[in-house]
Length: 109
Image (cartoon, rainbow, N blue to C red; front, side):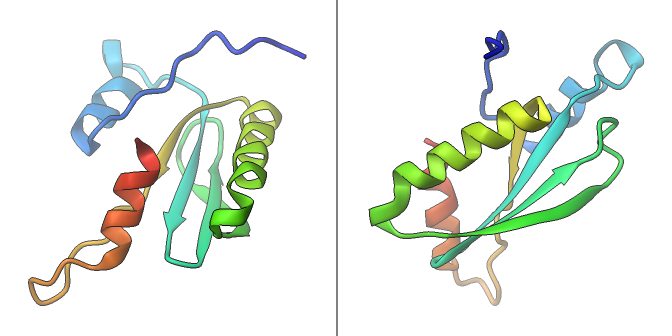
């Protein structure tokens, strides 16, 4: 098994853009998009140039299968040589914070 020498970190949108385009050129490497809901996690994988993401799969989100989800994410990191995650952050509708915001924030930590 190949050892991963990269460290992933939390980055806000502007910081992610700056990281991807540092030194005036696009850094290559696929990203995994995650849409975290209360029951499911939708996954999408970008192309190597991060121009577009295609749907990949949906994971069922339960407390009892957290290890299974972690194993699946590690498998995807290895399989696609992922360099980072992009986690959807649902915007509040009508000034009410949606519960999914808390789910995504807790899962990233």
